[in-house]
Image (cartoon, rainbow, N blue to C red; front, side, top):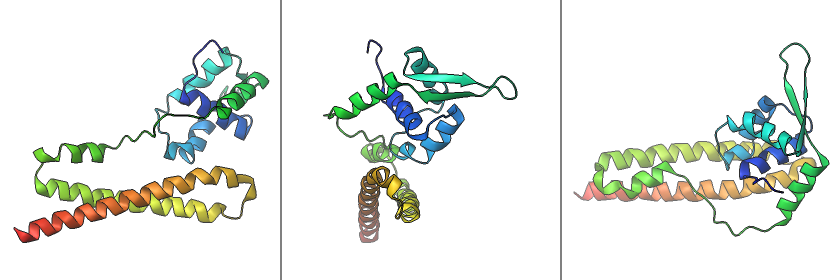
Length: 182
């Protein structure tokens, strides 16, 4: 393949392959409830990337002749071959974590102690909320064999959220203990 495909290209290819005929709006909703939990990217790409993949012959498009003139994408045989080829390649790339809270903690020496404690408490709430979301998804789809393979990454996401929650709870205790000693 001459053109460079990005992770977003593969998200689009995989999601269209998984869902069948799909509009960009459908992609946005489906990704928001699945891979968007661990691979965030600008949603504007869900409107531009399918068009690029059509130009590369990896997706085909059909347009409504009247009404909203929506464009519906389907994966081509070449697109499915490219997706399978990508899936067959192991990756050595490190996990990427883009965590603004962690960055703020890194520069914490310039912050007020109350601000760091507030950061910890906000993170605790956020991670508890995400854990509840993941556990709800696990419960809703626990008996669905047709999506069992898609549920495996959810286990990793849940473990990462639990680890982050443990970290922030411990950090909050440390900050509270330090303050009570002074």
